[in-house]
Image 1 (cartoon, helix red, strand yellow):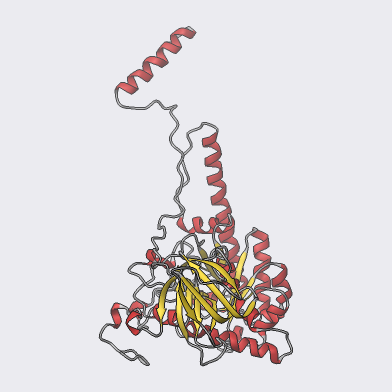
Image 2: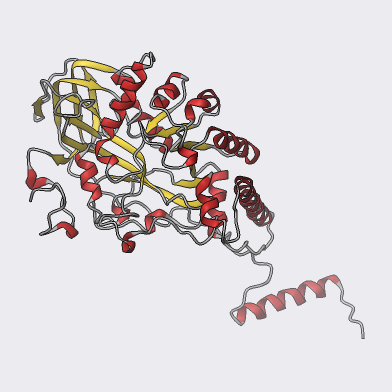
Length: 471
């Protein structure tokens, strides 16, 4: 039997149906569900700076971290910010005045490649939480979820003048996961150390590591297999983004679409393609780095920095053209074939080509003496006839790593308005005899060499004496 309604009857029936649904506690099918949005910062920083000091340091040799040098200089900071840098600054009322005659002031050192906390001291299997070696692409893991803030490496790095660092997952995988940038103020949980406003990084690795780890576990087992793995991962991320774009478009059109299922791996990769997460890539050989820059152009993302880049000197012009930094050691190479062709002039030659040069550690020991690493690279470059000075060399430790981490608007140089992250050195910091006397982070005195009672001690160290320590 067919039912025939006039228009008015149809409307009445619809109204009655909607009323019945409402009466039963149900919503009409036509009501649009709220747009599903993903929280991109589910673990926000809870960092609280130390009480800020009001300090004027005078009569020092000052390197501003962006290539400038002032002999007989001064720096004034208050409320966590640098107020003034110059040759002569009048002491404001209430400021502590430090006569730095014979001493130097620099921006705090920023290490953009550290595994402190994820490979913590003592170096045992129990503390080895840096490599998720279960799949060639593990973009879903976050280094911050492995970091042990009690690692004694943090205060030791602080004593070496390190005020901030990026902590990355290891380099076993094509994509190792998210990296995090922290202030070097040891605290109870990692969110208390997280650098406010710093973008996430993402660790990738090329060359021998992924094929060595996965060659007998289904691949990749070759460099071409590595590249195939990256390409498929990026293609999957593009597909994931299209699904979310379609969902949002349908919702804007008034439809009631079902949101795509969240995929944490693709979510991180998509964050890179959207420019929100910065790529830091472990690569040694020049040809590998060239291939990776081709790959970044194919999928339209930016590699922020190559790390361990011992052959950057061979392609320094290409690195400059593509705005990719090189994070390097001064004189560490040859420990495997892809690290074989390093030279001591590498960092200086990258600088000479106008590319972004960075001195990094990748070491719980090296991070304590990064000033000496920069000193070695400087002297090697000068011996090769490259015009360099100490002011330029300090950019390798401050401004350039800050740029690679997306935090240069906040730190990395001694400029008015920047965070007061700085170090008072006992003498020329390019000397092996230099010691960080005072380390300020956000204007708070985080380390005072003259006051051992103020030195941070981690719970694990209480009552225990480490090698070289005096307690």
